[in-house]
Each structure stands twice: as structure tokens, then as C-alpha cells.
Image (cartoon, rainbow, N blue to C red; front, side, top):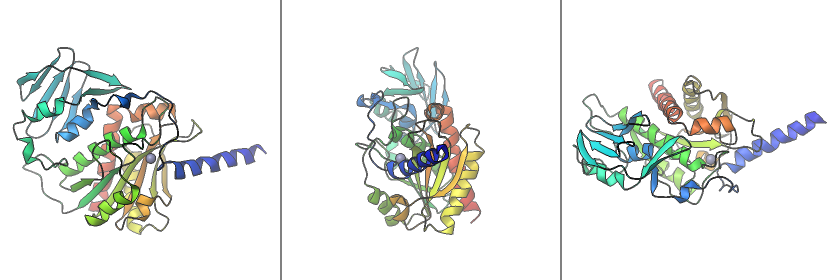
Length: 316
Ligand SMILES: [Zn+2]
């Protein structure tokens, strides 16, 4: 009887994980900090500026790329771009361990960049680097949910769509630095239909499609990251999933692998190229949710995903 009950629970959980993930979340509990839309995470800011967060302490946050450095000093209330004083920091606060700053700072920093931001094409092209060579590969990165569809709500009150985007923006930047052409299905908090996400990959003749999500389940003890391919997915899809799974398992995030599974998510079945959906971990698990909002952990996960993609291309 007990065994039956736990089997039913496991079954319900699998259904929830498989079906609930791409549906707008019914859960509204938690701290609705996203109502405050004037604050953006510093990783989002960095992605918008074609930069990465290279340092973060309470005193100092550094955003940089090959040609520019922006230094934000929260306690001194000063921002410098390329060692030149830009202005005051203004509104800045930590939300679940992740620093958020007023959105208007993006335009201010952009105006002071040595390489005019106009030279970046709108969707986060890489900084020009002497060792940068185009790989000829096009990668579509799909941050799950967005806009009116928040995805799952974590035990800490933040939304899945935010974590998905924060990690995806970093993955995109890392891949661009490796020479890949990256197209994002969304690069801000907007709603995109599932079919449109797949259509973006098909229209762009992408080499691969990678969708980034975070899991949720009624059982708070359920944990781990999971890679999904479609049931009818190609061998290449499975090799891509294996490569990412392998790198994520070695990323020392403390989040363990549930390995590669099969599920017919619409973004997987509608894409023509090899396609993988990553569940980064469980937002319904207190510890994993905390990790998924941690800047260092997000960076590790993003690096692991980008490394897995690079391994896949290398071993083709
Ligand atoms: Zn999801």
C-alpha cells in the first residue's frame, strides 16, 4: 500500500514535471518582486551591454568585455565607465542574493562605452576580440516562459522565467565569445508562444536548439537537473543532451544529474534541428532554488551548458 502510494506520487510528480513546466504557473504564492519592473538584475544588464559580470562584492560590481569596464560602487554610490565617473548608482538592492539595479542605468553606461553600443547588433553580439573566429554554427537559446507566463514559482518567491533568462543570457554570451552565432527566442521578460520558439530555430536554420527551464514539483525533496529530448528525437539530440549533462555534472554546483530523459515538449517536437530542454534544478526544493538564484552558481551552470555545446560541436 505504501509502495503504491509512493508510486502514485512519483507518477503525479512526473506528470506535473512534464506537463506543468510549459504551462503558465497556477501558483501565485511568494514575493511578487517582479511587480517592480524598474529593477533589472546585473547579469541581465551585463547581457544587454554585451558584457559579463566579472566581479561582484558588496562594495564593487564589475561588468566587462574586451573593450570596456563598468565599475559600480553601491556603498560609495558611484559608477565609473572605463575609469571615468559616470554618475550615481541610485536604486540598487539584493533580491534573493542577486543584485538588481535601476533599469535606466543601461542607457547611461551604453552612452559611455568606448566602442559605441550601436556597433553591437541588438541581440548581444560578442565584443570584437583578436582571437575570435566565427564557428559557422548557429545556436538558438530559448529561455523558458516570460512575460505573462512566469513558469514555476520558487519556494523563495521568485519566478522560473527570471532564472531561465539570467542563465540563458550568460550562456548566449559565452557561446558568442566562442565564435558561435546565437539567436535568443527572447532576451527580455516577454511572452513568446511555444510554436514560435521552435519556428525561430527552423527559420534561422539553426544547428541546435537549447531550451532552458527550471523544474517544480509538489514534493519538495525532489531534486537534480534533467536533460530532455523528444521521444522521436534524433541521435544528435541525445548526443547534445549527453554532452551538456556531462559538463553540468562536473560543474560542482551541488545539483546532481537525473540524466537524459525523453518527453515530447512542444519546443522539442516542433524543431527540425537537434533540440534539448534543460531543467536546471528544482525551484520547489529549498536548497536548489537558493542555488539557482546564486550568481556564482548561475555562472557555473552557464559555463557548463556552453562547454557541453562546444563539446558537442567538437565531437561531431
Ligand atoms: Zn519551465
